[in-house]
Length: 371
Image (cartoon, rainbow, N blue to C red; front, top):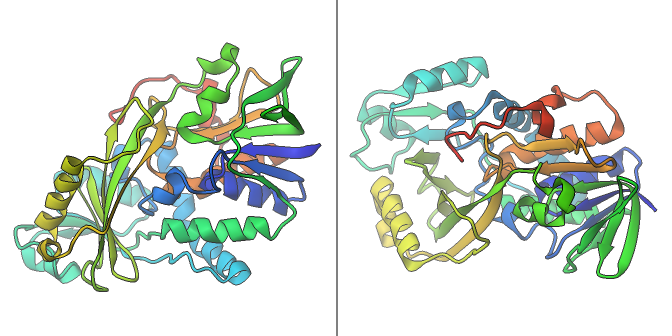
């Protein structure tokens, strides 16, 4: 019997396994695919929400923790595995000042440096290749980003170097429940027992819940569509968010362009029209990309709660079961804090924030603008 079985091998699952193993617990982690190959791999790597001042304060608490602690985690993983997750402080630029007052309030509250760019020359100073049509902006120079696939690769290598039991390419068929308590999982006909079970399988999580509690976990699917360019280094120096789309540069010159939309399916295909729309957005902001072909496209599905605050902690009606789901497309931004908060609850430790804000029954579920 394991102390903990984690269902879902994305960032939150991998980080939770790491933290719980560090604390001396015996851990098993399961994924229906390869560890980290679903939505976590596809993330844009930003360490804040696309528009952080539009999110609930509970979400900002998670992203603030991540911004503080990701550099040390990435350095730890590099030392352990030799894989550099490429955390870098590229800053975050918003090419308008529509939300100026809200952004300034959020920056002051979270001690984030904010520069108000009120002239095209100021915008050019921080992003030399941006379109001359961009005349103003909001710029957060301290915001960082991480190369999601490399972070996943480093975590996979770290997990596999430890005495953590890993099950891949074999979906969990159901929870093992006895007398109102989760006591393990089934992989096909094989029962694996545990003192506690953690579900962090994103949009697929509700399918694993017993019918009597399924309605208590209210999430819907959102999808992120992305295209990839391979430009020269420094073609784009800053991450940019505009009109709910984004451009994110990587160290080697790769540039990710993406957007988020609502969906009620698990379809991860991306249409030619969607790719063209993203390309046109990218070219409007960075005209030099008109000479760069699209090298790759992908789409991924995430789970989002009605008010945008993820569920993190024990389920109130089924003992032995904990959840970490509903983070939307903020995989990197919230996963480090979510895993830390979840692990601390499993261990019975005081964490960096009050976990009650993320518990299922601690909130009035009013749909947010993101729903």
